[in-house]
Every structure is written in C-alpha cells, then in structure tokens.
Image (tube, rainbow, N blue to C red; front, side, top):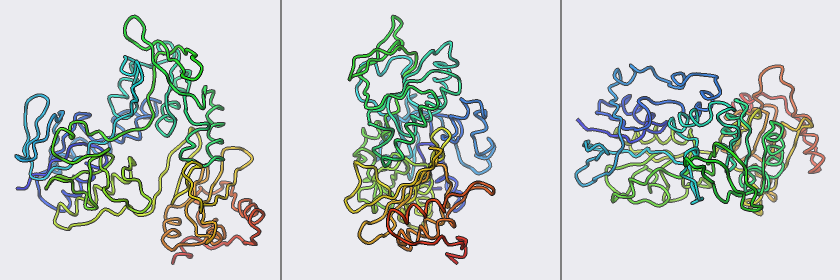
Length: 447
C-alpha cells in the first residue's frame, strides 16, 4: 500500500490528508512536533483572551484520526534522505515514505537584532508561542509593559491580546502609518488612529536597535534606533512578518529559494516530493499572485488540489482571484482583487476612497484610470459578499457598474445601517458620473 507522509499538521497538511482519505485507501501519516492534533491557528488569540479553551480550537474530535485511518506521529524531522525515501528524526528514529509532502508552514522573521534570542522575546505563530506568552505575560503584574516590533496582521493581534489583560503595549512600526506598505494611505491612517484609541503607544517611523537583558538573561528593555530612547519592558513580540520554515529542508537535495520551489502541480525538484502552504514558492508567477502566500485559504486550496494529483487525477493549482480577511481590533477588513498601497501602486491604478464620519468604516476601490476596469476593493467595517466580487472580477466589470450594484454586494446583517447611497453620491461628485444605485439582488444580477 502506498504510504503518503505529510510533514506539518496545519490547514494545508490536514486538508490534504482528509481529501486523500476521501478518494483512496492509501496509508497516510501526518508528522508534527507542534501539537498532538490539528487546531485552528487563527483562534489562538482567543484562547489567551479567555474567549475559548485550547481544545475548542480543534475542529475534529480526537477519535477522528483513528476512525479515518490517518496516523499521527509527533517528532522533529532532522533530515530528509530522498534517495532512500527516509525521514530521520531528532530522537534517532526513521520513517519510510512513498510520497512526501512538505507542509511545514512559517516562522517569525528575525533581523539580527542584538538580544533577539533572550528569554521574554518571542513570536506569535504556534501553540508553543501561546504557552510561552502565558508564562511571560499572564497579567500586568508579571508583565508591566510589552513592546511589539513590526506592524501587520500578527502585530495587531498580539497587541489586542495583551491589551485584553490590561498590559500596556508599545508598538514599534517602521512605516509612517500602520501597514502602509499594503494599505492605501486613507485606510492606513484610519487604522493608525483606531489603534491609538485603544490606548496603545503606537510609534510610527520607529525601528528597534537592540534588546537589553537583565542579570538573569531576560528582557529588561529595548533601545529605539532613531532616538536612543530606552523603554523598560518584560516581553518583546517580534511580528515583522514570517518566512517559510524550511531550514531542515535546505540540508537535502530538494531545491529551495525563500521557500520550497514548486511548479503548478506543487511538485518539487525531487520526484515524489511536493510542497504546499506557507512553505511553498511558485517557480512561475500566477497572475499578480505572490510566489509565497502565507494565507489560510490558499493553504487549504493547495491541499485540496494536491489530493487530486496524489489520487491519480493530476491537477494544477489555481488560486483564482485574490481575497483575504482579517480584523484590526474592532474593525473587520476584507479585500477582493488588487488594491495596492502607495509604494507599490502601478501608474494605471486609480483609487476611489470613502470614509464614514465615525472614522471606523471605509472602502477603497481600485480601477484602471483609462479603461475604468474594476481591479479590486478594500472594505473596513462593512461586510461584502465574496461571491459578488469573484463574479465581478471574472466578468471584468467597469468601476461604474460595480458602484451601480454596490448594494447587492453588501453582506451586513439585517437592520445594519447601509452606506451605499453616500458612497455613490461621493463617487458621482468626484468623477462627474451620474450613476443611480440599483436595487437588484446579487442572485438576480448573476443568474
């Protein structure tokens, strides 16, 4: 019986295992050193905040794995010997495979800061990080201040977690406004203001110089590069992005760059070895997509796609139109298509930006300045339908048509105040258009 071994029990590896089992009787083993069972990584913050227990983050009961004949092995893989198809573990044991899938995920970036490996310095990615944070910052008596280094989605989650336990937070962000390498100016500035309303000490255009230790080798303070200011703290959170977790893979003959290099079928340079999820790097660009995408839904899609190939139905990975969602404290964020920040914005891309007077709702629509082709939308505090914009991008609507049917995109619950009339009025005023808001439902539009 063919033995499929998957290194990594995140969303990519587990999705792959489930779909292989649906379509075959192959032997499946998932290897992980992180936890005994798969859990929802995005829910870790809610465990620390007291909204749920860790076992609530596990989508499947413990009996699920044995019932579905998916073997689980806990251990660190030290080396991969592809010629003999053997995994060597840190404890000296080995495991043979017929096909190997690398789904090893990401690890937090470190940039060589002095003191970055001290006790009290940590990332926020895996279960061990959550356990470490519980020890480092159980309350505001043990931790009287934390410093977070690096903006973005992980940084804002980290800050929200600490604030939930009334731990003061200083947030060092090298950009001039929060996440403006990704977000357009208006959105970035709104989120910067929102962070400050939660009494977080947000330091923009600020870099970390070094982390200083006390006499016991623990964090006692950080030094800011620009001013030399010393900030006393007990915890330093490193959230300046992530990189593929492939150090042990680099010791093998599997070709790597920043990640494990794969083709559209997710095959590596070595026969019978594949890579999926955060650790996989596409050799050739797929449209505007980044070669490495550390996103939950793309990891799931890769798992579903590769399962077809493993089970005899070769299939290329096709992620479709870009979308993502997140939360900035109290403000929900969604993006569909491409809306580039100021630094990366192409010359042809024009933006329409609307912001509500309450300063916690806004949208930015990107479109081609000459053809008026709709390129993408960012929404903050207003829920929009994924299906609507997936259809719009496929059918290549103009921005005028999107604005006309914007009400059909709205997915806010009943009785929520709607803002489409205000948005259309401002769009008409700025562009000289005379668009009237359509009342058609999204189902009728795409019937």
